[in-house]
Image 1 (cartoon, rainbow, N blue to C red):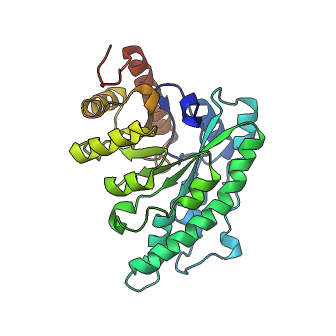
Image 2: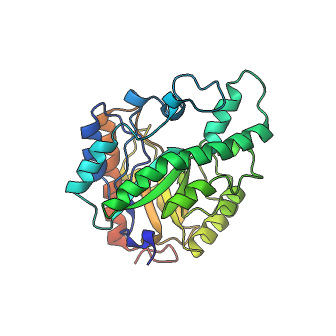
Length: 303
């Protein structure tokens, strides 16, 4: 049985960021409000996904000791929560800002026109640096009998170009029992297929599941991958009915079962309110319950 085979049908999880200022509260919420616990990212304390990793001045190419990202701010609190309330399936999701996105940020803020060749080289360097940091987190979970799903958040992927990147994420793939990509922009389906992630997380409220998307998703599922459907637009007043309608439309084109699927919001809720985050988590849980009761079969039909 593979790592992801342990997950329940229509397992819910967060994309990463949460709106809390108390790391203990954030960790407790990430462990109890979702089927798959995840390490909280706290933009109100750590900055956005670039500042979180690069520090306040991302203009230089390279990393200084003060930029060394040894552990997330809520890491110790997360380990305490997981020790007291470990998930039955044993899987915990970790997120890092993807190396392609970090490379784009560094190149574009140097003051010169970005060079794709330099950015690709920098992305490879960034991937090794990310893996060196994240490997300690993966091991810490393993020491507690837990298994990491490591997801690279790549919002810059579509604008970067789709060639020559397939092996950029290899250092991350090498350190984690399972790895994935979160793409909240338009998904470059060909590149994603060639990268062969175990999980593809994408914004279903933005990305229409047209024929190329459906074919790519079917191939991902056929080889044993999973889809994390971003069914709920967190920045809009959407709830479970919106998520169900959106997902059913997608499933009419893609024969995914609950065992092959996870449910998320479109993006993290770090810049929203704690009230909205609670609504998002509850809406995803309600969506999962409805889908489990309907028992969507392999052809996308309700039984």
